[in-house]
Amino acid sequence: MLARRIVLVAGLLVGSGVVVTAAPAQAAYVPTAATTAAYEARVIYQINVQRVKYAHGKLAAGWCPDWYAGYWSAHLSRTGLFYHRSMDVILQGCHAARAAENLARGYPTADATVAAWMASPGHRANVLDGTLTLIGVAAVYANGQWTVTADFTRP
Image (tube, rainbow, N blue to C red; front, top):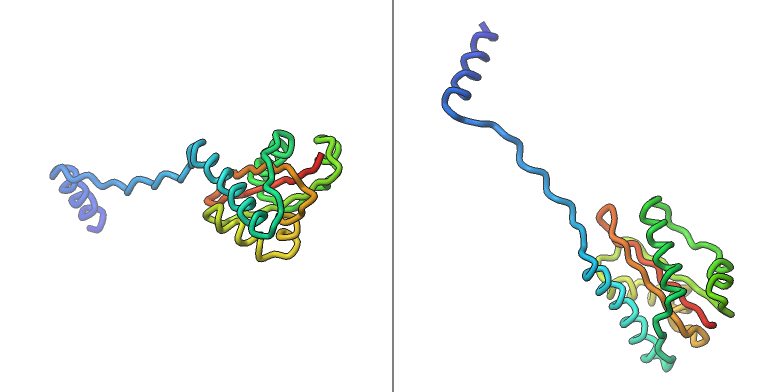
């Protein structure tokens, strides 16, 4: 009896032109290259705002720390790990006398990222270190969050 009812209901649904479908899955957010570049530029801008506020010179964008920042943000995003690497790699690779690194994950904006760094004594020290002159920043959006690396050097 139950089987006959199911067939009858199915027949009525199909015969009446009713089609049952699931709602489409919502597409995952993927920022454009321009959005990512704007995020990275805003991090550098906000860091320089803080440096000027505390009477330190602005950092210039450097291709070498930028390359290392890009590599590290991609690595951290891809693996899901979150840790600082040895600065020896950057010191040697960039032929730098000094290097430092700030990491952030999960902050929705560049402003929030820099605010978090300024609220952390170690990260704040890197931002305000007057001996550092170059910066590279890379932001990678994966798994619904930004992973940001800022590498600082002095040649």
